[in-house]
Length: 465
Image (cartoon, rainbow, N blue to C red):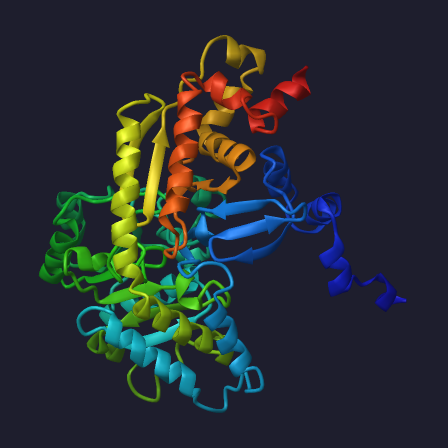
């Protein structure tokens, strides 16, 4: 009887949008389901390759979200899939052994990361990499405090959330990890003031704040942070989960200033967009203080960390990143895209700012909603634009031009352009032209929002009609 109630793989693959929406709402997250439905982002995608995905009606979409940076190689890269097939018969989880693929990937990471970073811990996600880095810092220094930046994003598990700089995500879960203190991003004076008492274990920072709205620090900020940390005996942690593996024009974003952290957090594109991987890599001296010797070697472990499938994907993805010189490609394509977008910024007031490096680019929009439009919707429009304005722009790109983007989590007025690094110039031009058309026809927010019948604003107006 129970077997008859279970849903099989083939049945789930045949589901249409309504069935997916109903089951997702009932068993997973009704609020998220409503949000995606409101923006018409709940389409059923059935195929993916390179920079494109196709929905169940055969329409092709250009993916400029790129799995939040996890798809540097694009969707379903053939060599990564082939690598998984190659190891399909090997034991995937066998803790009573040493996995040669894990040893090989750790070696390769030590070779490509800057300076003397060498000791690797493998987990399954970016937030797990951050958790491991925070634990390592406390164990190695004997100190408790962790300093992080306002508007940062390091994950949503307890330790990572404790150093994520947005109260919206923190408030429902307080008290969080004690001893975590925030300072403004890009402010070396504030950093020195916090570190001066010599009681801080680590300063964790993103070389570019991704979810904060693609915020690029001033030149010299990372180097200054390194010097201040050295002065007060504080470890420096760089969160390169989103910026790593070529995204910003260097293999790692910290290389823009030739700065070496004590610990670096990695994830996302390391798995080739196929298998989840998280990792941190640390200086040997730091790791030894925390976990050296047989008595301490098992203080921090992970059941699935270093599994065969993940390591095969990681080995292949890293090799492809280096062989295709994706860092150079990101730098060149990013310069081209930024130049075109900045020209656009000078022409249209709705586009407030363009910023980024390589192929991590943020577009920040003005919030011009007021007057009769807000009154017509009972205040809903101002509420929507404060939290989801980037979603309205992303919706217009999606519905009218079949281009997938999304807003950044900490700044919803910013949409990110974060395509696979293999993106072609003609695809960059397609996005540029689409944005030009949207902005050209949208001297007011009303014009932009009403131009598509399935935008969130259109949905609200129809509901109130």
